[in-house]
Amino acid sequence: MLKFFLPVKNLSRLILLAVLPLLFSACAQQGSGSPVIRIACAGPLTGDQAQLGIDTCQGVRLAVEQANQKGEVIPGHKLEMVSLDDQHNPAQAVNVAKKLVSDRDVLAVMGHFNSSCTKPASAIYYEARLVQLSAASTNPEISKQGFDTFFRVAATDDVQGSKAANYAVKTLGVKTVFLIDDKTTYGKGLADEFEKAARKLRLTIQDHQGITQGDKDFTPLLTKIKPLAPDLIYFGGIYPEGALLIRQARSLDIQSRFMGGDGLATPIFIQLASPEIAEGTYATMVGGDMKKVPSAAQFVKAYEARFGEVGQWAAYGYDAANILIAAIQKAGGKDRVAVLKAMREIPRFEGVTGEVVFDKKGDNKNQFIGVFKAESGKLVYVGPAE
Image (cartoon, rainbow, N blue to C red; front, top):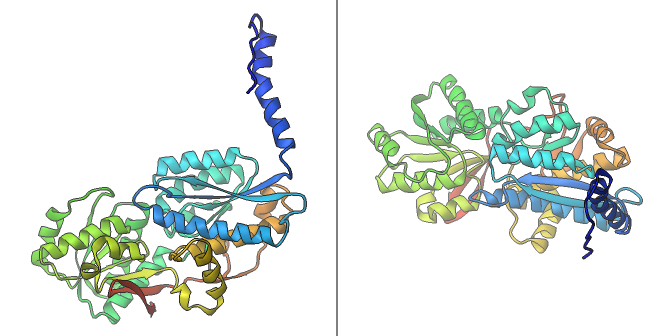
């Protein structure tokens, strides 16, 4: 390590001390090999929702590794992935977005996972003209902001909530429902969409209450629900609170069916709730069982060889990353504006999750919703939600 012992007596020497580290950094970069192009992955990588972010980012990493194995994505450049943890916290997501914007080697961002993080971060990416493609954020309001830098591969909650309500009424025979949400952009948005569709189907809504992410005791709310004996408790939220809700409901001998959205469509929900208690729970998901999709067979094989058991969101991260790589190639790796233009010019993309076609708002026109059920300790694909 170099040390400098320079007596600071005037402004010129102060400037020299400030500039020298930058000069050394520039020299180090010049000697480090090919110029770098980066794709970023932003999501919850620590905390109680970490597995969701990890699954998604590992899908991105696999796509980047496979692209590099085929040769240089852009001649003379090295493709890298950088991942940053937003802790499913909106304020942290904004900080992450600012960091990524300041890194001029980042030409595209796959993120964020949670709608509550994607929405505030999207304004930062828009100002920087940096492409943002989310694999998982489903709140429909995000794309209504008018930011032409925003795209997503996942179906939206107005479709998911509506189809979930239709499935509950027409397939499960539900007549009364009590709705709970976690007050987040995703959770409340999904439950609101379920409620709107349920009312049109003349399903009796007994009440709609909110809980707070991170809370552990839902007994007071569940005690109010018990005498109502709803056919179904519908939860708009993520698996940590969902598992606690169903555990505490069963401990109070509330035997209502339990249903949620893609936030529950993970084996982790079953593990946290316990297989016995989770048995019979339904969850909708923005897609089907990747292990049963013929076009995803090679992806599943490669992913499990690299990382182990494939998570529900890994394939969406993989498709999102491959779309971004295609846009970077089409743009010639020039700059963010060129990549954005290339994204807008991609007519359609055949991914492992299906065909992706972006509309003018950046939403995927493919709005498939699947239904999963907890059976014998496993998350079993039931079929499409019509």
